[in-house]
Image (cartoon, rainbow, N blue to C red):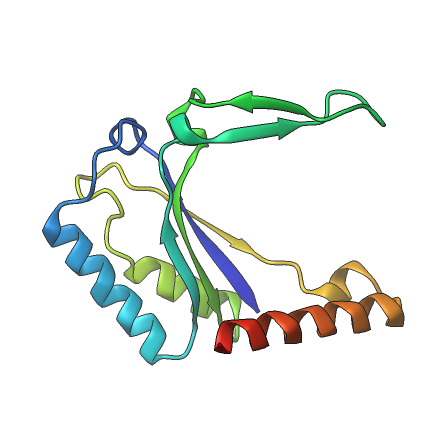
Length: 144
């Protein structure tokens, strides 16, 4: 089971305020724990929405529309994420509860969401085989 821990943005993260050295070190220790446990798939902080781009589809069959950031409502934005693979929802919650306050001053919020696995989306053997091939290609590229 894969889960994404979504770190919600704050006014400071949207203003480009970087984490303190202490918080950065705490997050690195946490990510090392995840890696040593063999559950870490990815972990990254994201730049503020001022450098972001949204692509929306305002009408069915219409052309996509590009909207440049910044975007409003910092609490609705994402400042970073950690992707883990664990054996249960409970284990994902345990790992999420161990994450240091992502903003370091009591404003941190983490949203934990399970990632769909392909068999939950389709039972088509061709689609499942295509997805497995794609994952293998990605894994081979990541090993280079």
